[in-house]
Image 1 (cartoon, helix red, strand yellow):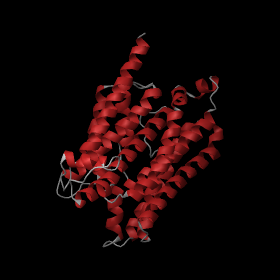
Image 2 (cartoon, one colour; image 1 turned 90 degrees about the vertical axis):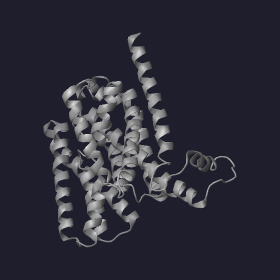
Image 3 (tube, helix red, strand yellow; image 1 turned 60 degrees about the vertical axis):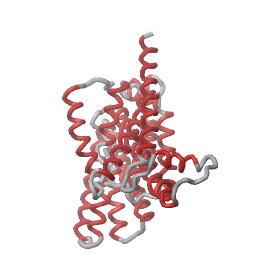
Length: 343
């Protein structure tokens, strides 16, 4: 009976988080350099579903649907992707300090974007390069693991290989910054690396939504298996889980969603580390509810941070700066005051 009660409480918390996400989603349309009244914002959104006689200007509709809607949607996708991949990696590696960039995807995507900016590619080229090199970095990590993993300690070797590959691509990024034009390419590379959703449009959202939604769907289907993996490979094998195949699927999906998120937002740190911890503290370590909660909480967190970034000062603050400023003290608080919720 107690277990049923705990599940019911977790379900209620999840439902409340969904309501909070919907509320913040709507409120995000109202704030910005050009404030829009709630009735006008609601009217513009409803006009795409039912017929309404416009009582707003064309500029208001452009701001709502072509500027704020893509940005808000992108924030939801990026937050969900980073949080879910972080939660999945933490369970798979049985390490609470693991983040989405542990296998080198963030460093690889950063190098791809920096190289594309250096070569003066357009926005789509930058996103594709970031996505491709993010996948390349994780592929290199996995190949190193296959090469050395036969000697045992596969998880440890994979993490160490990811650190090595991440360091290598970070060095490549530094090299590109060193040779880049200080008046043109270097500022663009630096700004991209700090993370931002200011330039996101509908096309960017469409390109990123497909791999992110697909990856999140597969991870959600595997959340039962992640519960078993958190107890170790031997226990998982005893229960009939093919740990090698499962690990490959999780790595592929988490890499895909992380690379897609980084491709449209740049590097945004600590989201995939802090939000899974907060989710685990809220509903416990059971991935049946933990993963959906992490997805929703990541979306809420990124929406709030993005709203703060575009309203805090006259000049927009890069998202990576804000997530680090907010996330680091909060994560330290979690480490100091609680160990609850880790399986």
